[in-house]
Amino acid sequence: MTLDQLERRVRLLTRLTTVLFLLLAGVLLLAAGPVRTVYLGDLAARVIEADTLRAKVVLTGRLDVVEPDGSLALLTANSVQMPGVVLEGDTVTTRGGSAGLIFFYEGHEVGGLIYRIDDHREVPYALGHLSLDQYRHDQVALMQYEGQGERQRAGFYVNDRSPAFDLYDYKALLDSAALLPEAERRAVLQRFKTRADAGEFGGRRVALESNRRMAALRLSDWKSQERLRAVVDSAGAARIEFLDAEGKVIRIISATE
Image 1 (cartoon, rainbow, N blue to C red):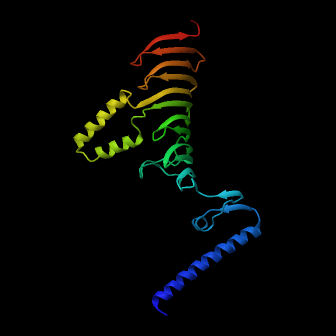
Image 2: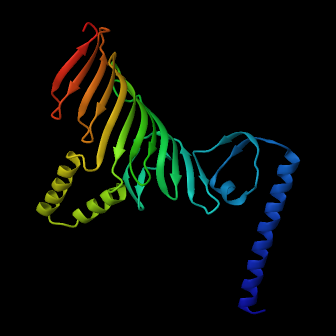
């Protein structure tokens, strides 16, 4: 027997062993009836594939739901295995030890739900966040809770995003600027900041929140400058404030007027 023939027989025996192992695993699963608890480790994820798997409890650190073409549709993970925000293969920011779930479309993140508690601080900190993203862009609608001691804030927010400049354009700008000499890099980023401050790329338009015993509805212009506030303060007094383009209050309507 030649060496090539021996290698072919070893490969054949390996395939036959794998098939027999899968058949045996299937028979054992059928004989055992409905599974109550499934531990999904690396080996099980590679070996066991089925159209339907029924279980009372599934224990795993991360679960990826994919489309028929293999692209990621939904990811849910614990605080350790939750990935950061990824743009074109680069992790641009972490999620700070948050657990939750993230939605995707064709590889692009389009929203998610996360929750994080940091009780190692002198005053524990908590964050809950649910958001929907504009396609290939950042958040456009979100609910968020943030609390630390007496500082407690919760609200619903709406942002406008420019369709002419998305997150991938911003990343390309940062990548190209990083290759420039320091003075030129600063100049490029300053020009971008000037355009952003002018409202060219959008900003926050609506905020409805409760913050330190004050409830407020804030409506802003395209530059994220507040132009109208409806407030019920901590003393229970209600008022409506109108602001100019510089943020100065130009008129107040109170409950007594």
